[in-house]
Structures are given as structure tokens and as C-alpha cells.
Image (cartoon, rainbow, N blue to C red; front, side):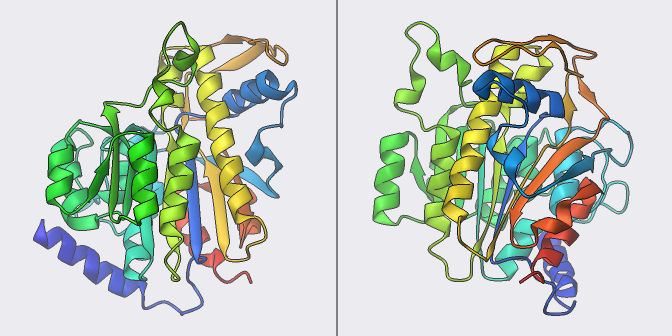
Length: 364
């Protein structure tokens, strides 16, 4: 592990040798809707507002498409796609932040770069924190299944200043406390920690993935009376991270869109996508009027091959068809607002993101 960290330091030093103007905006917020294809977005907009194109991020000034293939397969998984978005390097499916194919060295990523620049960094998700997408920004291992390795990477090496998501799966409260984190497990504890200015901060909200938004409205189930929603954890992260005058990098994942799509659970897909849109709306409102912040919204891949047969209406679920229980190779959307947003128009590859983010720093 020491060899991996040393390799990251050397590579970051090389990255730092580029012209000083090629730096990311002061604040970068990357929002990833896991599995969120164009039709997922369309269905959620129609259900919520009665028309497509009506989710919060669809009004962003820059809109484009992103190709998503892995190094070894045109159909990516979350590990390979998130690694490409984090590091700019294509890897094989299942790989987290190391050069496979290649010699297996650790790939420096956006979180590493932000840390090197003196910024605060954060990871927020609705999945287990050691799941593939957040792991690609905070860990380095040949297999996404090595959850304990991923957790140790967070706690002892990348050390995000803020981590919020589901607990367990290798990441446990006692280990986080021993590593110097303040651990919170519900909304009240989170608010108290924010008021006290506690940092670094680890939110472990339950054991496993966060509950589906849709399930909170069924019968007597009301888990979100005590657990924070994604929009709350994302804004809590911004509150904690924005205290740094050097700025911050934050990855926010709506991770359970993908889980619901794998199971063809339309109601859950729509409610997860709506909550993701609400989260982006709150982040955009926070950034309104700032000239130093870039917000990017995209997906790691599409899941389910979903297409609308009958689009439905406001409050009426659509009729859909599916082409697979897995992922597909189709392009996904990318939307951006703020400093350098225009760079994200058109068609890009997911591995282009780090370069585009750094080029956005030149747009003032």
C-alpha cells in the first residue's frame, strides 16, 4: 500500500507540472446518477411535472452526451466507468482506480488532485460507501469486491474530509472513529456534528444501502423520519466543505437508480431519479451567483435498456419496455452549469472528464 501511495504522489507531481492556468475551478461538484439513462430522466420528468425536459439539471446551460465503454468491454460496469471519470484512464470492468490493463499502478484521480491542491474533498452516495462508484474516487484495488481494502483506503490513505452513505460492507463505525473521524448515524447526529464543526466526518446511515425513496411512502414505513435524504447529505457536505478558502471537490451519487433498474422496478426508479434531481436543484441554488463553482451531472452507464411505450402524465406512471436486466452500451447524458460549463457540450467519453474539469479552470 505504501508503494501505491508513493506512486500516486509521484504521478500527482507530474500532473502539477502542467501550466498553472490548467487548474480545476475552485469548487467542483460531480453528480452521478448510477444507471440513469435518457429514458429514466424523461420518465421522471413527466411523472413529476407532466412534461419531459423538466428535471432540475435539464435546464442547465450546457448539455451533451457521454460514451461509457470499459477497456475490455463496450458495456461498462460502475467500477470501470467511475474510474474513467475519476482518473481519465480506461480500465477493465471490476477494477477500482488501478491501471488494468497495464502494470496495475494506482491511478491518480480528481479527489487526489484536489487534496494535493489543498482543497477539502467529499463522497456522498445512497449506496454503501464502499460501493464501486464512490470507491473509484477514494480507493485503489484490482477488484471492486475487496470492500475491506476500499474502506482502509478511505480511512488511512485518501481520507475524504466528508463521507456520507450506507454503512457496513467493510466500513464500520469503530474503525472510522479509530481513524479520527466523527461518526454520525442519523439526521439529528449529522446536524449536531455540523453545528459543532466536526471534521473529518463520516455518516454511516444504516447497514447496507440507503432505503429506496419510494419505500418510505408505503404503509407505516417512515425510515426517512430519522435518516437524511440524499439532498440533505449533499447539502450537509457542501456546508462542511465550503468552509475551506481553497475550495472543494465533491462527488454525489444517486446510486439506487441502478439497483431499481436492474430489477425493472419503475416506481423506485422514478422516485430515486426525482430525489437525485432535487439534490441537484439544491446544489445549483447554493451555487447561484458564484463564479468559482462547476456542477456536472451525468451517469456512469444506462441500466435496463428502458424505453417509454406510453409516456404517462403528471402523477401517472408510464408504460415501459426493457431490453435487458443488465447495463447497456448506449451514451448517457451530461449537463453542466457554472465555471467552464460550455466545455461539456457535445459528445465526450467518460475518460475525458478530468481534462475537461481542469480546462474549466481557465474559463473566467
